[in-house]
Length: 317
Image 1 (cartoon, rainbow, N blue to C red):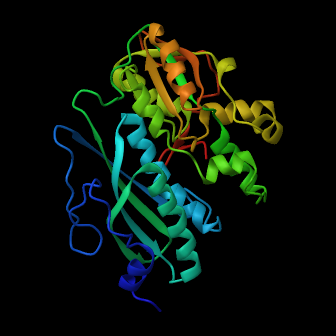
Image 2 (spheres, helix red, strand yellow):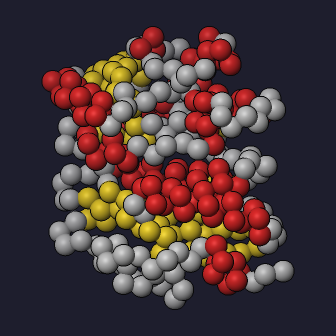
Image 3 (tube, rainbow, N blue to C red):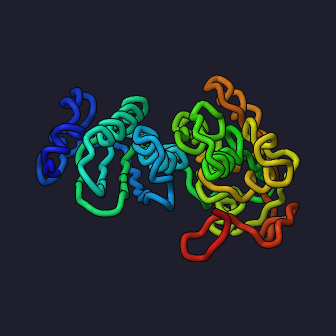
């Protein structure tokens, strides 16, 4: 069996980063040394993905690698931060080299696509789990947060909703064709980094949709001290969702299903057109789905109290 140091050297020691990467010292020492650009703040987030909880253990290895990084990058997108660096800890049941090669391929491909340098991590043996810490940069005062929504703002979402939950449902039914759009949305989500950068001077609040639209909207409303009215008929449903789940289940997936990793934003009504124009240039839709109002809670929907995924409180899968 290969040692963890051999596995790290073989699969997780990238080529030396370029001079603009801000990495005086990367993988291979007790710590990485990073050089943030002058005048910028660090945005840092960590996510843990556990086999059988966050992803199927028998999913393709490259998809697991992609997904582990994507869900963390989505948090940087929600803050309007530019991704720079990441750390990864991985717990493995054995040293299956072909699996590791696939996992590393998916992880490194998204690193390259998102401009993120892998600068260190850890490896141990046990139940399959991956922890990824991402670090990005944002100018002071430009970060989008959950606490700025104001009564009268428009609520809008990027892309389409329900694809994550729809893909999970198909996987659980035995679907394995990864070209299916819903399986792609579930196993290889796209962190909306470009959208976050494009809208950070327009949005008053933002969050990424990881636990379901309703659950994540409530985080924004609580932090901002406001309420909201949704227009469910306006929700943009993921391609193939109705056909795969049926009408009622499709709407429930869009409202309560997790793993979409789209952005939910509030912004002044007069900024909506400009926001949509900017995202059109990125090839992405921005759809208004409701309004922020005074008070508290969410009106306009009735799903018998369902509010999305909670690890320790039940909820939607």
